[in-house]
Length: 73
Image (cartoon, rainbow, N blue to C red; front, side, top):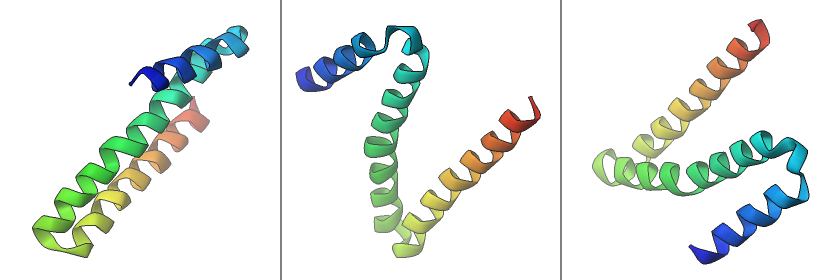
């Protein structure tokens, strides 16, 4: 965990004018690299390979929905 904190602080210090964007990207990377694989593993154990694909598809659908909302705002 210490290394993640160090990377986070270096990223924020390197671009102080874009702290919100950098923070958002770092959290998205953390969430996408830890939570989704865990959920995909649980789904794969429960219903097989199709469960993992379904979890990934739900994430992709959410991202496409969010992108459409950003374009209209």
